[in-house]
Length: 373
Image 1 (cartoon, rainbow, N blue to C red):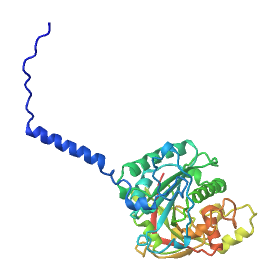
Image 2: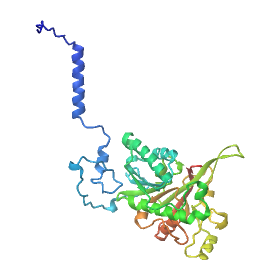
Image 3: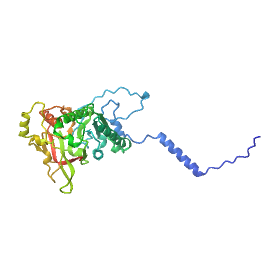
Image 4: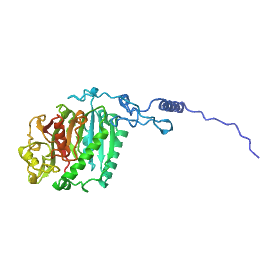
């Protein structure tokens, strides 16, 4: 038999508990009603692509389309006459495309890239990596670093957009060790493959609003933070700094530095005579005792304490760090994967650009640094 219940006494809620409850309700309502955190600012929304097939240099944010299917890409008219290329790219809000062929990932390269003071919302990054064991590992690490910045970094640290490509051809040499890469016998095949990779990357990523293209090798680990502004301030079609390498000098028992990139040069009568006697498929190479060209190398033009903005005209350029006006590439200058006047890849690019009326300029006292393996 059930026992009858006695009178129920309700416990009075304290005023403090009621106040806490009211605050929680207000906070929950605010989070539900208020807009999400400003992970995509109004300025970036204004330049965002409307469709995933829009130019890759435009930032694109996935939308929650009904059924998960996006509509057809819009027909858009671009007036390239409105694209400015000036010596004040920051003031004129000019878009920069930073392109890097990458076989190995170096954390120092990425850290240096993040330190660039050029507004990141105006920078698009483009990478191309080989489908090798090293290339796969580099892709995984690169994607990790990109996620940290693009998903979790401060908005001012995030780049406008990032494109990753994979090469659709096998590398000609299996190893990317420095000693193997620079063997004279490997140069023609290796640099032809590099030219194909550069062209694939360029043709895929060059957008209608790109003003400048900065070629930056994946093993360039130290540059001034103002690299883009400094090179653009010269307002030259092709501008290249001097590439050095830090190393431990056993004789001095101290850290030292030495020239690294010998592809920045002024032509010589000796080199021209050598070329005149070559077969049509032969190429001239720089920096090898077996092929003495006696060209004037920018690597040896550095003067300590001299003006970093000193300019010299060049006939050949390297690609370790190279700023190019986008109109040079739009004019048809690319990286020949074949002997072009007995030159190939970046040196062939300088020759092709010059044939189109664009002069290369070197900055012998402005240094960037290459990784030391």
